[in-house]
Image (tube, rainbow, N blue to C red):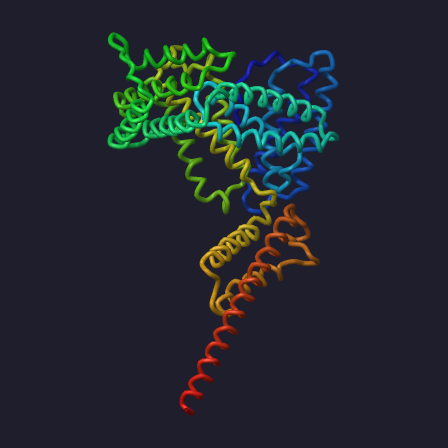
Length: 475
């Protein structure tokens, strides 16, 4: 396994035994991650976590007078904490401090990329802020955890909150009408970037986005940038530079919107010129990022059933290596020459999109152990089916609920002494599964009661009609 690139100070000989120990721990964590023959057991993760904390304690003692030192020990330690964090999600201990480590690391990169891209939606920030508050609460509730981890997490969360506030300040003067236009422009710009990375360039789709942009331009009474003597890429770069010059203070809402509109039109022009073709010098990194993005996107279709959170680790590390290989934000070729604007923005889009998928999978991870996920997912499916039945007027007869009742009873019978057990272990997530099971039983009961009432009413109407028919015949 390759370490994430970082500046490394010479290794203190006294730290060599610690490095050897955490390398061994990383190997054990990697082997545990790769073993798909059985479920990950909580005691295995906790045992490795405690062993890692012991090494951190030894490292802190050695570095009492050099707290800021960074060398290979730190990069391997980060690998271990990332894996431990994802393992905590896998065993369903989502609300504990170790589980927060990977999430905060991913969000920090995502926020940095949003700031670098210079466009983002307020809804992006709202979602991230909500999760940061939740993670901060998890850290505060576990003050007895590793001092190293708690200190690191608090520092990273503080950096995320600061970046988040700076991003919010950039949109602070948008009134509701301008905000709606701005959000539409963000959506179009992202859609254009997605078109730019398709295997087949979608010419007609790009033209449709351009038509939408021209319609917005007419509504704002703006004119398209004239760049005689300059390429669209050069003008786009100038606009980005102008944004940097105004950083540190909020700009007027109409200025923000009109600036983004101009960038959208320029980017549309650049995309139409390039037709999805990247600079040959960056074909290798483009292909790698495209493959990562596509793999993560495909996981979106099946992750509830098959994703083990530790699967995200290899993607995280590949992305980290690419991200950290940049110099002052620039992607460089083999001769250390920066990419042109089209390649820079395209590669940054793929990088940001990939981290966004990882963030999405982490925050949507259920607080249920991998061992209980099959039961939990079955109950989720049953709940969706029962909700659908309710929304469509219920059932006409209790007999129609028989398949649901059979399945619920079979799941309920899997409990032993009130808990879902896997062998001798009681995995995390019991409360979620039992609560969901009770909710499904309650919905099934309500549907059955309604169906019985319908049957009784139908019988009463039939009886009334029969009685009425007898009276008429008698007359």
